[in-house]
Length: 307
Ligand code: KIV
Image (cartoon, rainbow, N blue to C red):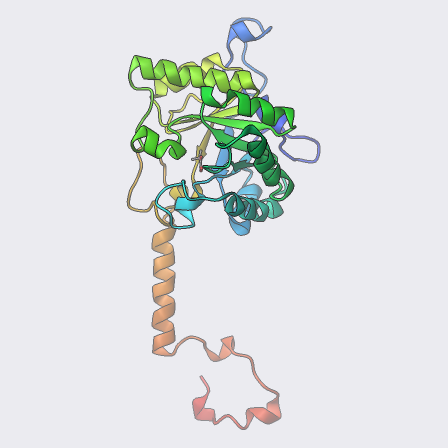
């Protein structure tokens, strides 16, 4: 279980997460130099897209459950996150929300749901909250999202930012590449993170960037950073649950930043192969796995046919 500070009823809230800054910068605090922020405990975040997974994650004590648009690749079989629709995000967020008692539920705004106009973007985010039950939304992009983030916050919708590698920019960024590797690029990622904070986001995901850059951003921001492929110095970490479990599309293509804690694909293959063998060989179902009729009718089944 996480040792995260929680409200009296154990529910993790947006203010709880916003206060979980493990790195402290003297310029932003009244605390004495050398002092640490109140919470030294890193934020744990994982993705989930369905009821049973969300329930297991919640019971294991994960702080934040992200219904990421990685849904498209992890579950729906798309080869990028771009085709994921708002309706799909609402449906999966709703399933996750039903399962969760403690964790904060954050839903991704999918590609296209915040690119047309501010009004439409707010309307779409409201759907994730009202219909999906999300407690916050995540928006990819930095400086370009300042107005949008401010509008969402004004509409009482907490926002988690997301800078660095932003998978929805697949075409614009020309693929999935580590970001911020040159000094100009690093300065841009830093400006993006600062912009997201200034606009009112309560936390920001830092994806695929050098550890040193993520550490510097984490040091400078007042809001917590949640890293994926951004090294250990962030205030928290997030992974796609299928990568952590070795389940599905990611299996076999191990990303540098993924630590795989299980091999569910192998376990599922083993179980399904054994099931097929048992059915084909006639050992499943056994007599003990069968219902039985009343004793007087039982006599009508020839004894030799009973297993
Ligand atoms: O969609 C997603 O799962 C994400 C995380 C990888 C941060 O954006």
